[in-house]
Image (spheres, rainbow, N blue to C red):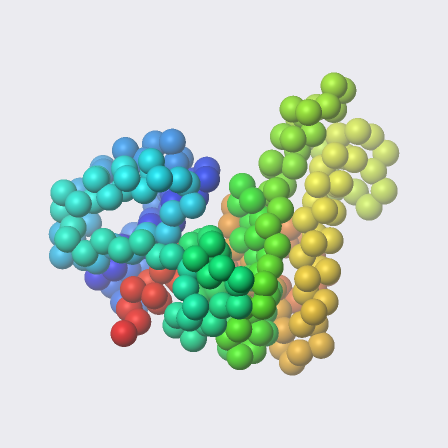
Length: 239
């Protein structure tokens, strides 16, 4: 039995996996990390725990303290040179975010061809994984909501927009929403062009903003639930 925990900047997602399927999953705000104890009380005490954390040292300490009361096998995933059929070419492998590394591992387990791994959350990450399992590099950019918030916070007359996507926006609300979405879509589609000619290449799209992006992407894509959690389970189960 494996408990996988993805501690992100905004949310903590967790899942209990029996080696074949998810028995339970949940999500809470990262600021409410202490409430994870309520879920943890229901987890098997002999289950191993694997965590990827990009929310900082305080959250890592809170998770360790909370879980150590019931679990003796707790590990944190970190970027490495190779794992589970994925090889990293990052200049400093340890600097690669654990969430990106887990997503790449999950992507390789799901799909054997060249793919673009996109995690659309507080930040959007866009990572190239070739057909040989080599991580060739990727992008980090502000997520859709963070882009909107930055315009509202740092300009005098632009609001936190609630417009709709338009090809040719004719009002400020739609212009902001469309601009932020086009920025996301453009980065994804430009990165995909590096592998577009490879047989069966596709974009694997996950995260809270994934469906919003998927509605407008003009490349082959697949929405994937729990890609990071799946990568953590794959890592935990590896020899």
